[in-house]
Amino acid sequence: MDVISEAVEDLRIGQVYGRRAEVAASFAGRFVSCEGVGFHVMLRGEGWLISGSAPPARMRAGDIALIPHGAEHGFAPRPSTLAELPPAPMGLQDPPPERLPVEMICGIYRLERGGSVHHFLRSLPDVVLVSPDYDRDARLRVLIDLLVEDLDRPREGTLVTRPALVDLMLVHTLRLWSGDSAETWDALGDPGIAAALQEIHDSPQAPWTVERLGRAAGMSRTAFTRRFTTLVGTPPMTYLIGRRLQQGAQLLRESDAPISAIARQVGYATEFAFAGAFRREFGIPPGRFRTLSEPLL
View 1: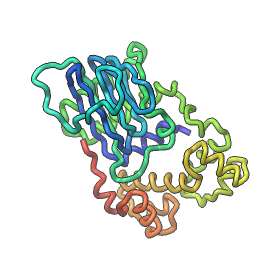
View 2 (view 1 turned 90 degrees about the horizontal axis):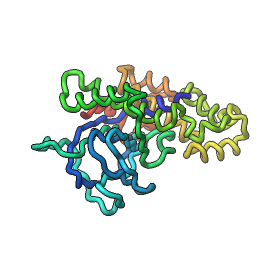
View 3 (view 1 turned 120 degrees about the horizontal axis):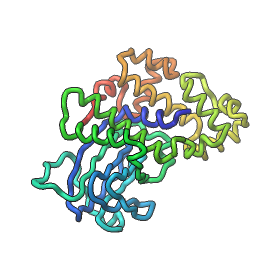
View 4 (view 1 turned 120 degrees about the vertical axis):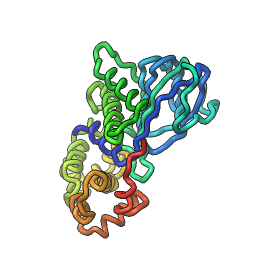
């Protein structure tokens, strides 16, 4: 099960945003929590990455900070707490009149229209700091350079290039964190739960029940439910419904298939049943979601 690919694919129903920022060495700011996944790459200078769940971490030029499930975090010139930091300015800023000592790029997928971050990403710490070896992985340096150019000079095709570059940054960072393995997710370390997850992801449209999934995991219904909920973080059927609706949202965004066909493809007998479940998850009906799914750059 390629959980990194699935986790990043799930984000594509969201809004992608990126920017390059130059700030003074004294910059301090706090970024509020959101439903989504983001990253910061320190291009020049240094500072401290601040979170509410771990000690401050020194961040130097070349380091990448991943925010895997949108937790509140911040930057400061010295170790501090989130409560000490003022809100960071958001949105595009005018370029400074002169070169400033700290420079970084930021990218984020925001799930502003419903949906949720993949459970694998939710299992990671609030902030993940990696220090790549660019001599060994020159491709990552090229990728960062491409993203900087894309942020500085938006051109025709940016609606395609920006999400693709952000996707690649997230994949590379997750690989660095997990050592090219997704086994950091406890759920995949349990053979029975991993088997059930594979069944759900391979065939979300199948008429699954807790009993059937339990048999796939080689467990009784009660033991399977308890084990699945503990390791994944949600009951089996809740997870299944979430996967179906996530796939439905992706199909709405990426295809022009009729909603009735999408409903059947993700396991709903009728368009009405799919629309009701979709509205409960995303807050809007499928047709409205489709018309609003335009990337925000």
